[in-house]
Length: 248
Length: 248
DNA sequence: GTTCGCGCTTGATCTGGGTCAAGGATGGCC
DNA sequence: GGCCATCCTTGACCCAGATCAAGCGCGAAC
Image 1 (cartoon, protein in one colour):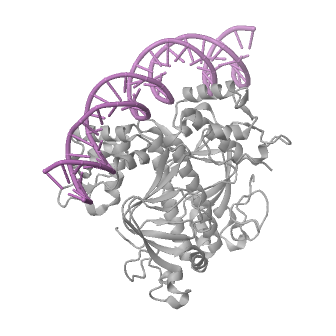
Image 2 (cartoon, chains in turn brown, cyan, orange, red):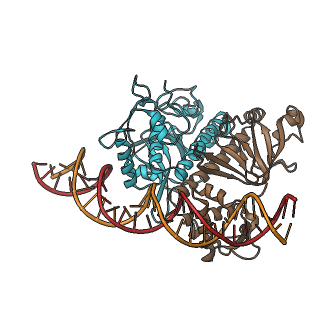
Image 3 (cartoon, chains in turn brown, purple, orange, red):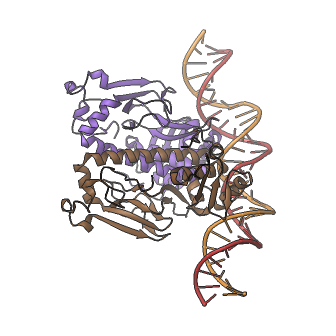
């Protein structure tokens, strides 16, 4: 799943997650303007802001490694994280001018970017891409709407459990081999970032993490290393109706 | 704005909001299978469910008149409205199997539907449609993410003000002629529906409506008829940084 | 080693909004 | 007209989570 090609798997030429022939500068650079003008890589340090809300965003792209978050902020400083970008996730709004939210590097981050104008041209010429983007955007919309239920109706404990199960499930590499339903991973978020994602304070996050640990729903080594002995139990705690606990 | 064509304004043949030639059964029915097999109208009474979450959804479509809401429900009955469909809004997930949430008619509702299979075929053949859908979906995604800020970080009073300003702004026909910043409309939602949209209880909605009335932010005649004497003031109450109070 | 800083935990207290409960208004129907 | 149902309002009380505050653990810099 990690770094899975996001637009078309039919063309594989390396570490760029956007592997459509039409946008593969490495393979058919003549199709495009000068290579670097269209496709390029960019690195960010943890904490750096990729784009500010409202600023013009002249590129689209996807995460190669690291984690970025999409956050909205009110003037008085209240902030809400509205999305989490893991490797292979796409950011960008073809046909839209500015960014609608801040994009911030949560960890060190490498992105693979395309300048927007040529990308849009390619999109017009390659219906497949628009369709793939539509699918991806529909998935994001579903995820956003599911998150609205979390924000609007779940208790603090359920919110934490929901976040943990999402992180666990989005990284399939984390299954603990041989033990059904057990997962191990390092939290990529500080307590504060978790709070911003969940609409809570960091103190409440901390307390609920402790409570889940006390009740054996999770095991904690240090502050970040998490073991989930029973994913089914966690999903129950999350108030999740889907019993997605069935593992390969 | 009302009933504005949602896919392509270049072809106008009546009351269907999807006015693309390729899907206009009335004008070029030969292009398609039997007319009724592809495009049809459907009416629902207030309270009726259009589709249940998880059920197969074999159509896409858009609202002709009335209001529908998208809601997610937990087993224990907690519900969260995750979207509001006004006339001309599109529902449907081309390329996706089942519905991800309940679609419920909030008022009496008329929808213009297309069976999904042929619609998808048309989409493949008509790049313009996929691109228009992508734009619309990106807009919905933006709206959903803005709503996440409301749900996660705003107070009850700010939530109510946000909802009122959204309803006011989405229906441009509601400007009170000649009076700058003044708007009048009938709330299309019960207090309970408002609560479900805002992640509150109906009692809190009622109390905050009374408070906003007491403070002169809104005027109420009966329970539903709302006058907003000063949209700027309302946006301020909503904690909205955009001073969208500039009126035509 | 010591000190600093940051991320985290935990405790004590406060409060916004939830919960429970009792009516009030409106409108359809007999 | 009277009756009933539905939607709404208001009050009294409670509690989950926010706020304020103190201190811990651990790695980095010296």
